[in-house]
Length: 418
Image 1 (cartoon, one colour):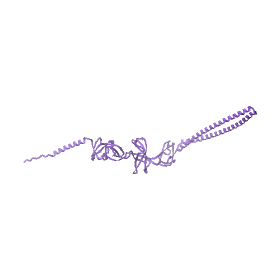
Image 2 (cartoon, one colour):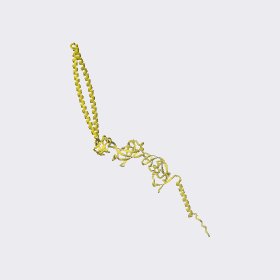
Image 3 (cartoon, one colour):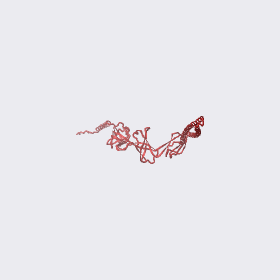
Image 4 (cartoon, one colour):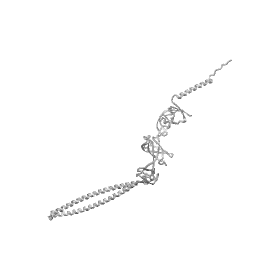
């Protein structure tokens, strides 16, 4: 008897066909999934930096470099030019005020000194001769005045006698008139002699005063020349340390040329270079800190130099409180200059993302950490470690802070571990 054989529903051929159709459908679905909607990109987790958004204390500061300088520096310039003949000390020596440092020679100044000394000597001699002549002239005039006085007295006596005799009719009118005329002559002669004596006295006084002024002028010029010659010996103007000495024996130095400097050893300051971008935000009183020998120290701006050179300007800072032991002139310090007080803020670490986004957006991770979406943000202040977030993120969220250079215009990143 024949038996009916039932045909199998799921033979190998049908299974293969269904598997092929399913694969094609999955491929179409995957293609649709990855090509539709927002642009996506697969990213290796090991190649990115994921940072958490935090709320913490924030202080805006910029890193700057400063050079340690003496608190007070006096520059040594050549008051007179000349050739370096002797050096009494070397660079780095501790000096006392007035102590000689070097000696210059100047032939022109030496000749000028001799000329001035000779001129002053000649003027002094001439003034003495003029004074002697004036005194002799005065003596002569006084002698003449004495003679005039004597003649006047005699003429007066004769006149008065003849007048009496004339009144008594003892002598004639001719003899009386003669004595009268002689008396009047001698009287006028005395007046003239007095006038001449007075004029000679004034003239002599003026001549002597002019000679004295000329002598004083020449003597002052001599003193100035002697001072210039004395300035050829360069001396320390104050107590301190001699530094930056630039002079060798036999070298010629021009007037006004820098020879070195004296650093006053009573403290230090720090000269800091700052980018001109911050010139409107830097003012006297701002503080900064640095670490030295595993200890933190504080500095405060005491002077701002507003001149900009090469895109930078300078400020002077002084130590607040303790000065580091062992710090030396010329040493470079890395300082964090605070531009604001410390406040609470929402922060994200600095990273390469900023170069592509300008701080206007960032990739934020999904809750499960498998994806990252582009979101708009707004940043405000910054320091070398963090950006301050004012909009777009909240504490606890995670963001990608590494570079976005290869992401193009992607809107979504699929995070996978390779």
